[in-house]
Amino acid sequence: MTLNALHQRSNCGTCSEVEATVLELSEVSFHWPGRARFTLSLREFALKRGETVLLLGESGSGKSTLLSLICGTILPNMGKIRISGTDVTRLSGGARDRFRAENIGVIFQQFNLLPFGTVADNILLPLQFAPGRRKRAGNAKAAAAALCSELGLPKDVFTAKAHTLSVGQQQRVAVARALIGHPHLIIADEPTSALDANSQAAFLDLLFQQTSAHETTLLMVSHDPRLAERFDRVVRMEEIAQIERAVA
Ligand SMILES: Nc1ncnc2c1ncn2[C@@H]1O[C@H](COP(=O)(O)OP(=O)(O)OP(=O)(O)O)[C@@H](O)[C@H]1O
Image: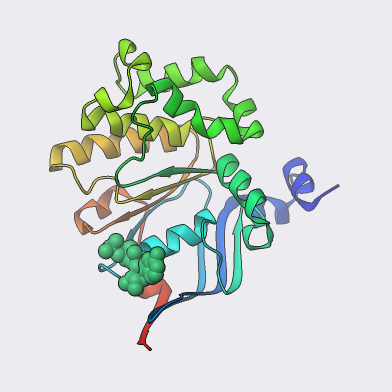
């Protein structure tokens, strides 16, 4: 039996601790290649199950780089990145893509919806690559429709093409796509940056309602420190990471 299977089946203290930590980075170092070499080093960073964390940092401080490392779209030069007990740096490229689809819901700044796909197509997309998540979603179409209704999207929008939606509606679709099948970890990269204060508050209400209902861990990047009070914890890039820039 694998360690993960043991953790899932056991109620022992050690395993509850492992399960309680959804994300754990240790001794991670990454550099972007090229003339203006940027190096990000991070000793330790962990997120607990159900925790909501706002990651703040100046432009160019490596926030998006860190999120890409967590999502496994780039690999560190050294160090461990464990998500729900699996060190993603040890997975092959294909296995990492599948792991991401299974375990992480991602919300991008520009939402990254398929413009000519329907709302349903967009929400169901991650399930195509993630059989476990598809199973957790149950009746996937019904789950997507339920999420739409919980997120305040009108029924007739379900079959509309994504590009015909308002920005506010597209946001909700992006949230539904990240939440379907209950991934343990949601990563959001400045999802509120293009919104006015009222829309920002409404967006966060939706996100927090959903994450608290399913004990989902949320790591959200923003430039806006005013959002801090809504989160369990605020982390600044300079507290957790060191960066170096060297021009060759
Ligand atoms: N694809 C890339 N190729 C090479 N270097 C990159 C790449 N992406 C980022 N970098 C380097 O990493 C540095 C940090 O960029 P990153 O986007 O992670 O910062 P950020 O904190 O998210 O910035 P912002 O708040 O402006 O989005 C950049 O200054 C750049 O030097």
